[in-house]
Image (cartoon, rainbow, N blue to C red):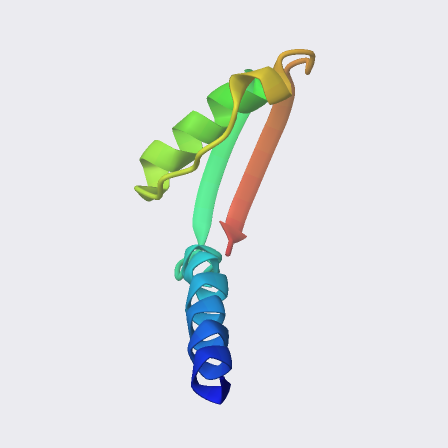
Length: 75
């Protein structure tokens, strides 16, 4: 019985730790500017510039207006 509990706990810890690897900050600073653009477009441009995959739903931003972003040396 104790072995089963330990095995279940071990598997749970592994499964719980997997998403943590995707939550790392960007290791470099970023200069990014997006004037008068939709939030979804800004995320796509930022993803391409940093070569980091950013996953989101377009429906989340469907009611958002255009924004201005000016970022200098942001981590």
